[in-house]
Image 1: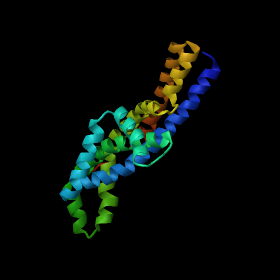
Image 2: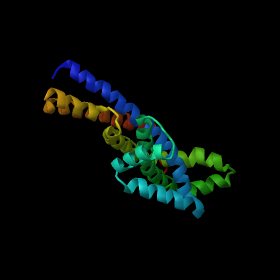
Image 3: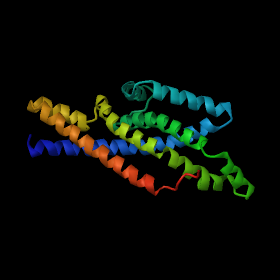
Image 4: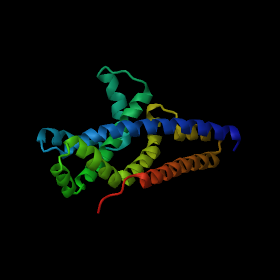
Length: 213
């Protein structure tokens, strides 16, 4: 396989990484809201959050992408394919991240929170200094794993017309008749990207505050 073909795959991988990173960040912001709704004692908030998680964890991502891509124009929202792809990935990863965060917040020792309240800390201070750091530390490995899964799942956005790494590999394999070399190179690029994400996640995790025992 020529260097030119490999460069095309690398260029497409930048698109893959960009879509994935944007989707993960948006999904994390949504996940914080959904997890807060899950932890609420108000049924008005809990039920919609449960429905959201059940749908986006239960339906295949491919179906979600096609549904969003075809639904938006029907309700009068005409957006580029890239926006539909990011929306689909963001909502999907938000459902998984919300469950991870909910588990993390639920695992915060009640004694720590009670002690903080006794010394006069405000709810915001308790959240910022106790709940959030411990929950993040507990759930961080799962969040990194979810980021890797989204990077791999981003290959599905090709169904809405996005030429990312997998779609580029398919196009090049069809035009050059070198499927083995092309897909092996694409797999290698995915491997390197995910290895970098896992390595960065491990470094960040070690820098996070420890979990009280």
